[in-house]
Amino acid sequence: MIAPERVFFVATTTTGFEYAVCHELELQHFAGLEFDERNSKCSGKVLFSLGAGSKLQLRQIFEMLKRMLSVKRYYAFAGRVDLSPACVPKDLSKHVEIDSSQTNSALQELGSAPFAVVSEWREAVHVLKIWRETCGETMKDNPSFRVTCNRGGRHVFETDEAGKALADGVQKLEPSWEPCLVDCDIEVVAHVHFASVSFAISLSPVRKKRKQQEQALAWQEYTGNEKQHVQTEEMGHSQKLLGITALQVDLAYGLVVAASLRPNDILVDPMCGSNAIAETALQAGAKFCIVGDYASVAIQKTAHNAALLPKNLGAKLDIVRWDCRNLPFRDSTVDALITDMPFGKRIGSVGRNVCLYPVVLREFLRVSRFKLGQPNGTVVLLTASANLIRRELKKLLPLGVLNRWGEAVGKGWHSENMHSISHGGMECSVFVLKPRHDVIRQGQPSTKLHKRKEKASITDCTMGSRQKILNNRLAANSPAPPEVEPPR
Image (cartoon, rainbow, N blue to C red; front, side):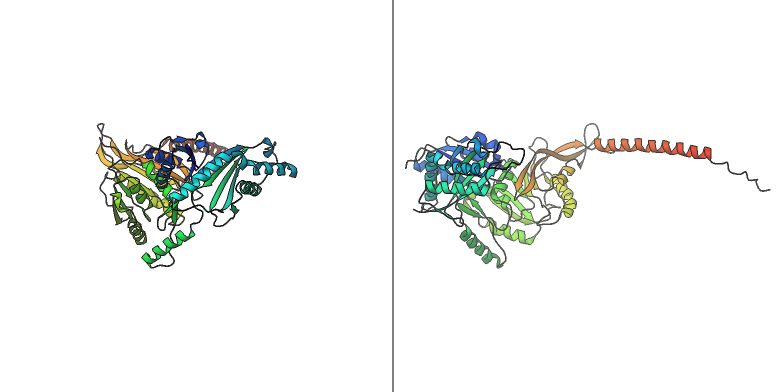
């Protein structure tokens, strides 16, 4: 089969970092790169198409896609079918009993949906074969498959019923494919969204247990601890060793993109953990990184993971054990600081974060570059306690200098960007901060505090006047005290 002129992909990433995928795709300078207009409505997914005139060009594109850091998994888009209005109940506001005949007719229509996109389906299967050949594998004559169905909106059928109907339709379209729910060769993803259904074939393999076991044994041999485990991150078809960490590669790359690193910037991660952020930054083009942590176990994991980096990166990485509350840097010397703040779940607690965040943010503010005539430093923080950081943004760090009017000048934060992401099912926030200067005004309360004090003073005056009236009334009604003769 001849390679298609255009190949349509679906790339998944962390919800909130879709812009990082678009940024990395644009850096690759793909020929004929086009983004789908539905990307604004898809959370955690990026739809794009690339031009491919021959099979050789398609393999070159696949090799470049597999090296991308911002993508979790790739899918070959296999078409979209519009469903009839009979699949969607007419009354969406109330619970209406649905007739079984209406459900059966809707499921029959859903099962015949793969036959409506036969040409796109064949192209997606061909793309899957070329992808597997690029990875050194060959497609079986009778591969096993499964259908994963996602549903959005109200329909006359349930999600499991839709998945069964779609699996029957795929098996009729591909008679040589055998259904299998565990360790299948091919995964077909169907997304039923209101009155349409979209198909995509996963290019990444479903089986990855053997690779995880091999990497876990490698880590056990290094540490000598059989209880340790290794988490792997799937990069297209290959997998990259990250060590014991909860921070995924695509999320780390999104933090690096948010920092907008310049070619000669020095990146600092004061809470490196297992060094996922610095490794991703070095692979993305950073030249020098300084990382550190307080725990000796984190330093050991960081050194182990740093030894696995490719030698041809030409980048430098320094690992230091320090306390992030007292960093060994001079004032205004750090170009970029990116870190994953403790959430208070696995490390520390929420109560400790209330005391830790103000001290740490004050230290980050001290070391961030802030000099006249030079670009200011950038601080990118990933946290689940956004209120603690917002509380510290209004505070100023005294610089010990006066302006031309004799006013004391301080160094504070300027929030350039803040957006929410979904990290492991948890709602988190990403702050992009830059240092700024402002005048320290002693004794001047904030607007809300001033209003509260004004309201409290009015209430006190009112209560005082009422008490005075009450005292006067009591004094008027009570009998006069008896006169006492002075002693002679």
